[in-house]
Image (cartoon, rainbow, N blue to C red; front, side, top):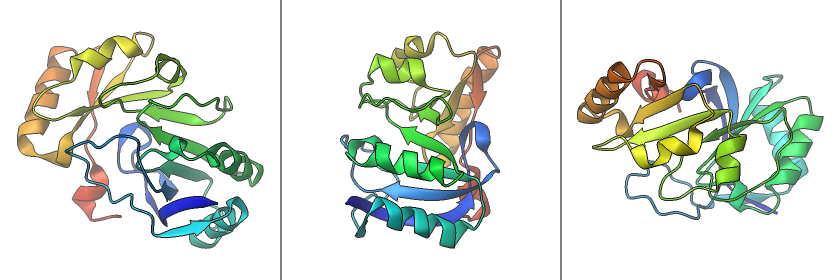
Length: 191
């Protein structure tokens, strides 16, 4: 049984896929307790893998993109089975992870790693996308984890103007490697 917070259809509001329609499966729980976290990932309901796939079909129709998020979606033992079932259902699976829990993922699964206090280097190497949260500073201690990534996204925590200014200045100072990533869904009022 999976512990879930919510399943909803919206657009990807951050990162490299911003603006892309997606069904979000927010798995409950997290293995970190970040002070700035803006997500309610508490358990709202339980469902089996097949029930989640059915819910994805109901809320998102034939939308090909499904984002597993949390909290930390890979903290749940059944997450790999859910990923496999969604892929078998013809979905393109994206996982948003803090990168602390090593999990073997199929090559066609898009992995966004956004490190907070620690990260498993294998997850950083596997990441398709690296996103650093800017909260009063750019967390430069995580940059070396993504040495093989040509682009690192800087996401201002809470879209707060001071954090936006820090991220923007850093991206402009390092234009070959860093890119600003705002939480567009919050600007347009999408879930």
